[in-house]
Image (cartoon, rainbow over the protein chains, first blue to last red):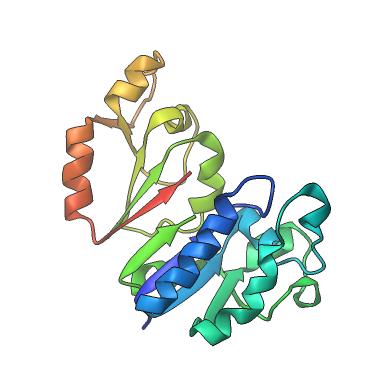
Amino acid sequence: MSDILFVFSQPPHGRINAQEGFDALLMGSAFAECAVLFIGEGVLQLVNHQQPEAQGFKNYTLGFSALKDYGVSRIACSQSALNHYGLVEDDLIIPVETLDADCQRQWLSDFKKVLTF
Amino acid sequence: MILHTINKTSALAKCRELVATGDQVVLLEDGVNLGLEPLPFDVYAIAGDAQARGLAAKLGETKLISYVDLVKMTAAADKVCAWF
């Protein structure tokens, strides 16, 4: 089982919080085995075709495609959050595992460290 | 055992599904306002934060603790998840 679980619950853009989480994940992946779980509004980070540049924000979500190259192979999101926002697999920028509430609790329990962003 | 901290009302939605049986939940800062609502799990609240908002006597079953208690609970927990 991986060492650190990053839990992302912030929406993209608008505030810097979500991008800071992604930066931390990339840094963490250099030192430990990392996985990431998107929950709540955090699943909106995964929506494809985001164009935040016109609002002055860098589209850091394009970097999600590179996570595999950083050794982050376990990427998951909350099934109920996807349902809440009416999102399906085709709406997402990368393929992710979808987890029900029981599986999410299991992930939180299994990882040695959990960091929330 | 995971210790969850909630520091504002809106953060409850994030951890509602993630709190497992046997976990502990502490309300702090504006999160103490949640002590006025029915919650799906037992919670502790920081007494100072509740007193500051006039809620210390209004939180029903919620157990009031100090920040020193929170430090001890943090040390005893396997992991801490901060929801904000």
